[in-house]
Amino acid sequence: MKDSRVIAESVCKQYRQSYAVRRKQRDTAAHANHAWALRDVSFSVGPGEMLGVIGANGAGKSTLLRLLGGVGRPTTGAIHVNGRIGALLDLGGGFLGDLTGRENAILAGVVAGLLRSEIVARMDQIVAFAELEDYIDHPVRTYSTGMMMRLAFAVAVHTDPEILLVDEFLSVGDLAFQAKCNSRIKSLRAGGCAIVMVSHGMDQVRQLCDRALWLKHGEVAAFGSSDVVARLFETEMKNETLKRTPHVAKRALGDGVDLVAGENRFGTFEMEIDSIRFHPGTALRSGEPLAVVIGFSAASKISAPVFVVSITRDDGTVCLDTSTHLARKEVPDLHGSGHVRFTMDRLDLGPGNYFLDVGVFESKWLHAYDYHWHAYPFTVEGIIEHKGVLAPPCTWEMGGIPAGERTRTN
Image (cartoon, rainbow, N blue to C red):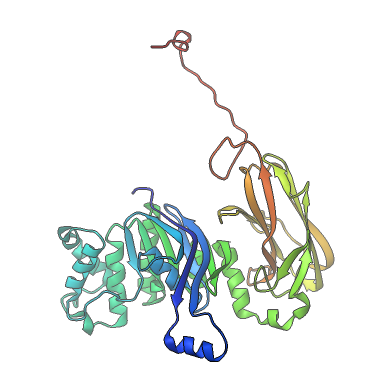
């Protein structure tokens, strides 16, 4: 499989509102007649990676997936897709009711880029995967929703996709079929397929995805480790604390950084992060040590919380995602004020701009007490000797070349 890849660069999508909406806006002295479905969304998905896109209804998830699939174009920004796309953008979308399941499968396979002979040769596998042996030659207008879903998924994963776009399909169907779909997706990933999946199931995102993108009103609310982002989303969905605690709605930490609940700060705030200190500072050189001191306070006893630290590049690339849990560092029950220190002996990052994210979670990761996202920028300086994220010390040496050959020229 070639270098399958999906890249979104500052993608914005604007829709013109209907006449009725514009008229209502005029009546209320509002003059904007365009609605933004997406604003400044950036990410990349490489070979063998899987990105989960999450968010509430109307957040822009399906709009993003359709743009990735070539259904429409961004208003501004750019999308780069390298590879054959297998897209599941709408349940049974594109199926013609009067055609049989077999005929629709052949048509979908040809649209996906296969020769008719290729899709016909795979038909037995498709039918068996979809469990439609007794119905494949019936018109799809007689199919149930689940039957159409199974057929659509079966066709998509048997067309040798290098990029797979999935919109909520794995949440439909019985548990046995969901397990079959999950297994097939893992197999595709192992073969180098890049996958983007929209889902409302956070357990599914944690289980399948490397990273998650949380969209909120068309904008990126968080982007990073699937586990962390899923918990941030669950915290906002499950807790109304943000609305009931104005005393923590906005505050400044560190070098005047504004923390705004629901924007770059999330949690129940039973335990709070009070301060962040960088040592030696926020302007670092590649290879220098880095220490981050996280000050905290808890009004009541908090049992064995988990502290997390993440470093992301300004283009969204996750460079580090670690926690006291992963480091097997036992954290005692905490009450009152204190601090925890995170130290790296060498910060071997390439030159560039980065963000430090910090947080403290409930002991079983059920929710965040306090999580600060992209609130602490820092820079790394150094000589550009490598491409990529890492810039470790390294040397080149030549060996095995006879002395007489080293100065020979033609």
